[in-house]
Length: 472
Ligand code: NAD
Image 1 (cartoon, rainbow, N blue to C red):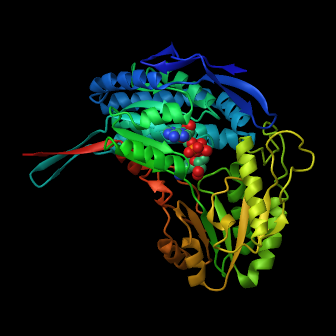
Image 2 (image 1 turned 90 degrees about the vertical axis):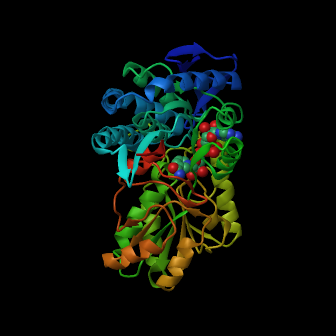
Image 3 (image 1 turned 45 degrees about the horizontal axis):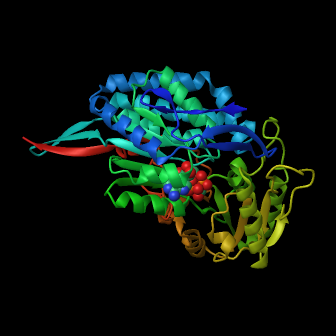
């Protein structure tokens, strides 16, 4: 059991203002594996006050000091990678084969990218008779989800520290342990008192108190569209800047001249990564009508390798959904899809054979999905791939863009120029050509309802800066 009974505020572990706790569940066993304090508005007030007073000196820290701090944070993550990976696997249900390299490994890569960026980033430049200086945005309220719990924290905390901001973090109540371990890592790395503060708790209490606090200069939120809207409304009341990283319903478009087998295989793996609980997952696969049946057969055979198992077993590819609510959502949406005319070519509704406890669902491939249907429009956040036919490239483009979201996507063609031209016409923040790999220094974020703003790399640092023009 991981029992955390304090919060990290003002450089030390302090008691919560309430004695209420939140139980943390292992979604594979449905057993309680830990507790964290259920923070209150009073804890947020204290944390914001601490971040505000620390901002006075931290904003004036040198680039060298911030770089050294981030380097020590990176070293701390490296030392505790194994512990972080297991903690996240146990709380989220992520299979260890991805918990190590992605859940714990990627955050280190992101911190390192900001150590590198601080070597070269120009915080000042001249334009005409002005000196333009990029200053720290101020006190950052960071609110994060459970699916990649440490990565999403680091995508905010690393650039915020690099910029000279101070932070109040509220991690997801479903998977909070990584945030606690990270607070320890920051403390050991010597983060100055008040520069980083952790308040655990529910969204309605702690999240809303952060988003609506007038002394927070920037709210950086990752999560669902509905909560993002609420966060935006609360922040707007104070004209507080917001960065919103929300959901997705991304399309992988396989043009007829593509390597079909490779495109389908990579597409299925992408859709089912972390049990499909990935905001940038390609959950719609668009295939030319002439190749559709062949693509279905390949997809079904790849899906069959995703049999559900214990996330801690290194052979497991598919863990449980992170919560009972998430499992119910996936089951419900598969049912709705079938009701709207989709047919099941792999998986389907109901508890997978042999899994009588845990929030397991089957890796599911659906055929005959209409582009306007619920399953093609709503973010499922589970291992459910919708296969959609197209007859020509223009129709493929219309279907790819037929979404309220615009986070990510893919296009496949042996003609790279054709694929890049297609990628330019898709209204999303990222597009991968022929399986182009994830780039941790490329801007990440969404068009349309997928959000406002960008994380990672230079764009991710700029989110945490203000610009001042000094006329000479
Ligand atoms: P969620 O919106 O339910 O919760 C996210 C965070 O907001 C949690 O910490 C939660 O406690 C908090 N919260 C809840 N209600 C709140 C309120 N009223 N005010 C303030 N904060 C509140 O999302 P989730 O279920 O944790 O995560 C899944 C969602 O996150 C999916 O929609 C997914 O696409 C999205 N996501 C987006 C990205 C991205 O970078 N675009 C990355 C990962 C996840």
